[in-house]
Each structure stands twice: as C-alpha cells, then as structure tokens.
Amino acid sequence: MRLRKSHSLSEYVDAVIGPAARRRGLAATTLIADWPLVVGERLATRCQPVRLTFPPGRQSGGTLVLHAAASAALDLQFSERQVVERVNGHYGFGAVARLRIVQAPPIKPVQRRRQAPRAAPNPEQLGRIQEGTRSVADPQLAAALVRLGCAVLAEQGGRR
Image (cartoon, rainbow, N blue to C red; front, side, top):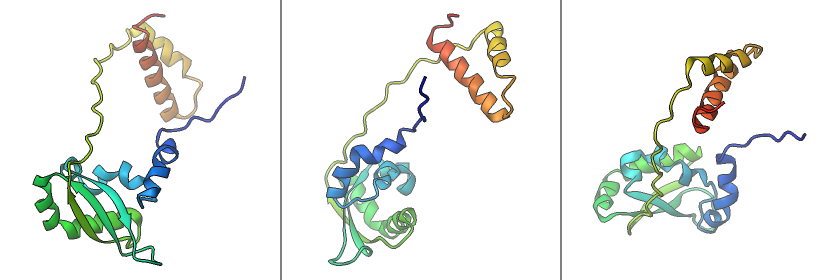
C-alpha cells in the first residue's frame, strides 16, 4: 500500500489560477486568495484585484487595477493609502504605489451551499473512537483523530 502525503487545497491554487493571474500581472496569486484578509470583508465584497502593472524595468511602485462597484469607488478613493499599505504589507515590499479603480462589478464568488448540521455520535460510538486513539502520544493529534472519526460517522449517518 502506498501512502501519499496529504495536501491542502491552497497548495493547488497557484497551479490552477497561477498562469491566468501571471498574464494579468498578479504573480503572487495569494493576493487574490487572501483579498478579504488584506482589505477586509467590507471592501472585498465590493472590489477585487484585476491586474498589477509595474513601470518598465522595475518590480516595485506598480499600479494595482481594481474592479469596483460604483458605490465602492468613492470609498476606495478615500481609503487608497490604507489599501496600498495593506497590499504592500501582504507582499512584504513596496509593490504597489497607487490604485487604479475601474467601475465594473466585481465577479461574485460562488456561494457555497450550507450543509445541515451533522448528528453527534452516541456515547458508545464516541467511546470506541476515543479507545482507538489512546495509543497516540500527541494529544492534539488524538483530538483531531477523534473529530475525524466523529465526522466520518456523521457522514455515514451514524452507521457502524
């Protein structure tokens, strides 16, 4: 049996959207993925980064092009300095000197369906799961395995 190293979804983001983002000047695709963390939820729902252009021969002091809803454009103009500081903080250097705001509706993110809450395992099932993790030395790993076991049981509808 071959064991494969598990990977998080974020490790595949660059491979999937990287080529398209690089064509638009967004070499670090983490700006797209982390946009709500960079500018905050309020602005992230109303604007999105589209392209980052640099002056010829330079890799700093660029212009970040944002698509923004008309209602957000004025707000972005007033908070341009803070947005530029946050983006540069995200990159770790002065990549952006100014913003260019294009009034166009940002692409709506795909809404995830809300899942119904899963039923907790009964005490007997929980005891079996905890018994199976007693030999695990790391308490955090044991707790994670118990949570995984509970999730698997819930997914199976409590069977087993």
